[in-house]
Image (cartoon, rainbow, N blue to C red):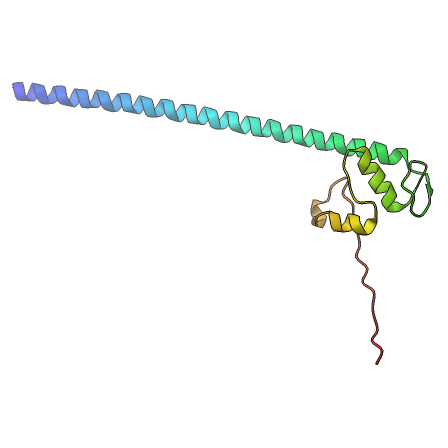
Length: 137
């Protein structure tokens, strides 16, 4: 009988330890879930801020560019009263605090390739024209 009582006591102690371990694991899991939710919430808030900043930058660039629309085209001019094409883009971006090369050839080399479906407001598009050269024999 004493052996049985001792065995029951050991089982109860073991169960108590298992229950305590279960509670600790549940607490850790709850804490981990809470941290993940907070992290996700912060990431969403950061993405929203970045998106709003991008919209603000786009609007600012649009305002700068539209303020110069209608100015006379003069080859090699960089503003503020007259512009050529690349002078207009370099002027507009400079006002945004973004330095890009002066000429369209250099601007095209300076940028990075973006797929057509990923273009957004403010992206510059350049076309490469290949000249056909004929061989004379």
